[in-house]
Amino acid sequence: LDTTGSKIDANDTLVRIISAYDKIEDTNKKLELLKWANQLSDWNIAHSHDKPRTMINHLQLKQRQEELSDVDVEKLNSLLLKSQTEPEICFGISVLLGIRRQADLYWKKMSRDIQEAYKDFPIYNLYCKLV
Image (cartoon, rainbow, N blue to C red; front, side):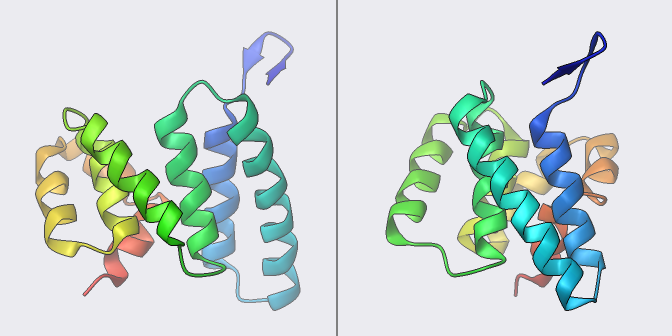
C-alpha cells in the first residue's frame, strides 16, 4: 500500500488490528475487528512479499478464531525449517505451534530491543498464554 509517498505495511496494520482485538472486551467491536483483520489478511496473503510474517500473522489471527488445521501446522513446520537463522520468525512459529520451550529458546536469541518491541505485539500475548 502506498499513500502520499509513504509506505504502509499491511503486516503492521494487521498486527495493530489484532492487538486492538486482544485488548477490547466488547464482543461486537471484537467481531468488527475480526472482520477487518480477516479481509486485510486475505489481501495480504495474496499480495505480500514478506511471506513468513504474512503467514504468521494470518495464522495467529486464525488461531484466535479456531484451532489450526493439520495443513496449517505443516506450513508452519516447513517455514520453521527454512527460517532457522531468523529467531523472530522461529519464535512466532513456535508460539503458534504451542511449543513453549522452543519459543523460549528463540526468545533468548533475540536482542533486548527486539524483545521489548515484541511485548507490544499480539504474538507475545499468545506466548504468555503458553504453558
